[in-house]
Length: 146
Image 1 (cartoon, one colour):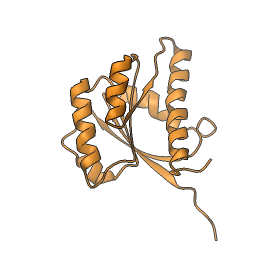
Image 2 (cartoon, one colour):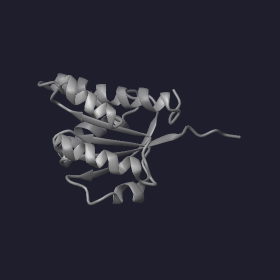
Image 3 (tube, one colour):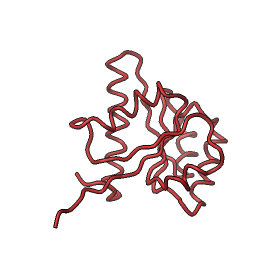
């Protein structure tokens, strides 16, 4: 009997294909990431919770600049109350959060990955940082195997 490695289903809510391309290319690159992932992307503001129901992601990864803090928290609350509730919500972006913002996010079950970097090598490292962060959390939850 052949055992298949489980794939965590990732739903990205990104501002545009350029930002998504920088981030998601790493999730498909063997040797750069631990675990296996199936990815789907939605650009810009999402219409209700349709992507949750259509895709049933294990992890929702949102880009920080799409929504303001209040809307991010409201959207997270709706996602976590839905019948297709993801196992993890991750907010990622280039600008650090204050301790108060991090506490607010954590209270709502949202993890934050700061990818702050300004040059090409830094951008590569920051995206690798998101990949490693997602991998670590998915492995902890048993969504993917090491």
